[in-house]
Image 1 (cartoon, rainbow, N blue to C red):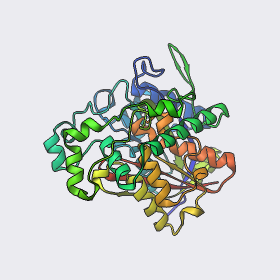
Image 2 (cartoon, rainbow, N blue to C red):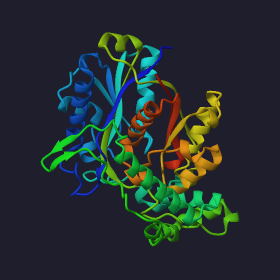
Image 3 (spheres, rainbow, N blue to C red):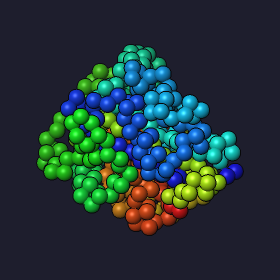
Length: 398
């Protein structure tokens, strides 16, 4: 098997998923076009060398339907020889896109690939694909499918994470993201020009939020519990007595618009193209945890990735773990015994925003940039999907 190198990782800024958000006027393909051209310009890239583009996208409906990985490359003017594949494993989709691209390079099927993700949630809203497992309660229960917030509240209840602890996670995420912005740490952002101006800064960060403001927010998912989610979860875990609804709009991921791309290839591609790799993709894995917890898959796959590579958490320098609600962060920290200064050091999706299909690729770029900034050796990026699923990558700085 060949070594797989990451030569570049770029992204758009994350814009609010609202009509007034900075990227709203762009279709998903138009946003990706900016990034395709940005990847070309940054790397003097000969696009005829790219075998395939693999993109994660969760809500494959409307403007994001019909294999956007292929159609967007045609829209951007890339060669018709570039194949396209769109993948969906909920919120870990773009990690899987990177993993699949890496496996193709490692096996010799391709010398160069582009992987990433896109989600324009202001134009193609979450759940607008009307999947029956999210719209028909009885059908959903037959498939053990609950909405993400309900799963997060079960995680919190099972591990004893209080509302105060969850709000503290959210406040830290906001503070770290604000610091990273001030210090210019998000170097993978490609400025996007729109009719409203240039979008080059993540819009969801609330630098001035306080703990007192977070504490005043009402529970966001208690109504889902009353509607039947609590009953299902308590049938599986009767010892809990009741579900603690500790998650609010303030300690949950913020919806947003964004896209991200990662350029992968073998050593020969880099030499031929005059490119120096930033990182090596060492390993990838997928897995699944308790479906009723919905969003704990990132913990399970991180444990699996460490085990498969004979590593302990203490041997890994940095972790970028999907902040799929505050309780997931607490569970990650406690289960893996990760010190606070190695986990999501530049904030996470609670503060920065969660463009579902693009989040994993954005986190990958953030991890690589931080490994370079601190001159550290290796890190793990992991994200949860729905139904307990998760995906993870082990990355080594070159």
